Amino acid sequence: LAEGRVLGEVGQVVGGLGHGRDDRPTLRPEAPVSDDADPTSLEARLHELWSAGRYDEVATLAVESYGSAVMGLQIKLLGDPVLGGDAFSVFCEDLWKGLPRFAWRSSLRTWCFTLARHAAQRVGSAPARRAERNQPLDRSPVFEVAERVRTRTLAHLRTESKDELRALRASLSRDDQLLLTLRIEQQLPWRDIAAVTLGDVAAPADEVKREAARVRKRFQLVKQQLKKLAAEHGLLSS
Image 1 (tube, rainbow, N blue to C red):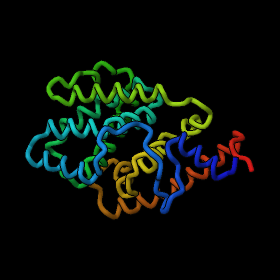
Image 2 (image 1 turned 180 degrees about the vertical axis):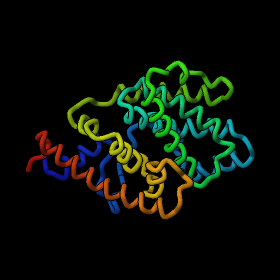
Image 3 (image 1 turned 120 degrees about the vertical axis):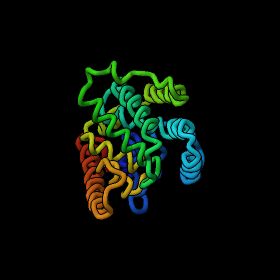
Image 4 (image 1 turned 45 degrees about the vertical axis):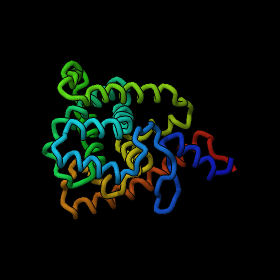
């Protein structure tokens, strides 16, 4: 296989590593997203519901639209579907409770990934406290949607290929896997990625700018690392 073709295949297996203009990803996300509408239209609808104080509907629509991607990210960060499911429960609870205080300093989607990362960190730091994290959200309709998303996401993961190319991604650090997921699969702009990695959607503009430059540089290094790993595994040839 030619090098470019193999890199494309490596990219698709490990999460869509593309070579488009400005490094913009061109491949589809790994996990299905139920809402096919323009993200801008979806965010507008979420904002409309939020402005009307219809927080349960906001949470339900957000989980239905972004939940598979969120849980997929958490499973990658934690390296375990069970812990990923626990983190997804924490995420749903945090989203539901935090919506009335959300100030729209970022898109709701960016905030969701920020919450998802925080939830994964908390679950990863205390894996033995699962019982506290499995309380059902029976106070909100978002619970039923969350369960559907969980089932759908796990079913999708079970059907994924488990070959050597996919193992390349698992060999990366959690921070690098986070970066690939947000940039390649979720197609977030660099400033939004910076907000997630900083863990603060309300971070000062100059801090976000510096972090965006850092993660963009790191992204280039990760691409080079994947290429090197592919070569070491004999996946590149002339």
